[in-house]
Length: 482
Image 1 (cartoon, helix red, strand yellow):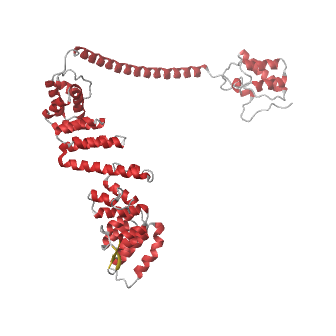
Image 2: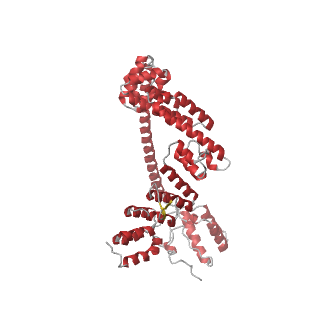
Image 3: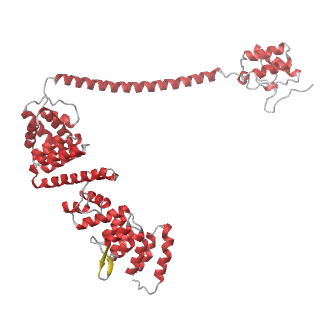
């Protein structure tokens, strides 16, 4: 008869706890042993043989069904099918009741701690809400008691300073308003001053408000705060009136110009300017500038009318500065005669523009057109010994104009070499990165240390281009380096 098969880790049947089985389906003797174990466990008896640390267990219904299958003779097949359908935890012994009680006690203790913590938080929140409620009730009672009692001016100013709500409508007489404005001015707080000024502007006219301004202890502070407030609101009319009352007519006219510039229609702007010229006689000598501005606008409108179908830039010409208008005429109408409206020479004559300014505008116009040949013609003069370069504005300014418009290096080089001051020439060549001209200038200066250090100013990608030239010059013994 085959012996019952056992795993190496399992204990012998005699030392196994009740309810833990190791079944060999190929041996019927093991069924007899299993059945006897089952009967003893159901009757509460101890298993045969020595048992150490035996713990009684309660078999659930599925294990009892397996035992009944053995009794009814289902054999090994029934046992195998039953065991295959059972979850693994069904074959394990139940935990002792003592461990279950300890787990429940620990869980209950944790729950009680959490409940106590939540209760303390609720108590703290409730106490804070009660304090807020008491404060609100106190403020409500104070408001009810003060509802029919006007606050003093000092108390009102204090509330404005700390940002509390207050009513200024209590102060209706002119004397009270004057005291209120003086008290706000003495604080030096901008928000407080603006709040009082808004109330005064709403309740009195501008003449009365201006008288209050003049009586204020710090008139300039009040006026500056109020004008800044009006500028933010873009209330240009009120700003003009205020500055007119103060006698600052130049500032008043400038604000009128800002208002006129915001008008969309150019013709409407022109009419407003004409009205400004006719009503601003108090400007005195400054009225001449306003009249010249009107004259320039008329010229710009005429040029725009002639060029609007040909040159798109003419649409932006109105209200441009004088030099911008002159540059436009030099660029598009540089060769026209003086008797034409679009002639830059005529504009120069009418507005007393200097010859140097006109010459500079011509150079800039040729740079914008990228016509370097025409640019050179403007700088070339004929003399007894032939032609030479000559500039009424200096070649330093010529180089700066060329650099501003990104002229090529071969175009700028001859004009750089016309600058007599070597230091200025080197600074310009280094600034605009004309390395060939800078190296040539260092050679003329015989500055050996500067030549050796200049290679570090050149971009890495261009260093090889100039390295051989610098080394050749440094090795030249005919140059007497300093």
